[in-house]
Image (cartoon, rainbow, N blue to C red; front, side, top):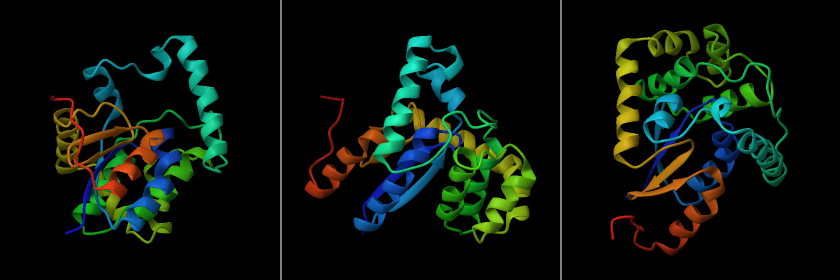
Length: 207
């Protein structure tokens, strides 16, 4: 049986974008099963003591900008630090991931295209037509998935992801949960790989 990773993220998260290719390489290398769990970040932040970017102290906002540049170089990416259509309401774009999974599709190609759409191409991923086009370009039925994304059932699944995130001690994006052990942030991917290589028992805060 392949090992499983619960992958909590939002398409509007720059850190999920920055780490996505590295994570997917790890998935392939270690034959992991990924449980994609898009989650609404604003609610998750507020419930776990975090703050949205614009409410953080200017010192923290400035440091974030430096970190984005560091990791952009580290991961070999080219993207806008302040894209034209960010932040945005990610409900519909995230919901397409859930709708794709529901329909039996692998959402990875859409995720790669959507992340790039926000951070590289400066597209508006709050726009249904834009999301549908990106899904189409990823080999998915875009219009169908966008329509399904707006349904009450997908909203309920999105909310369930939030509840599952809280129950798993998840408080941001991206978070990778391996056998109950939480790895918060794409800068913890190397630590996740260490855990996979060693096959050690998971660490726990409950000691």
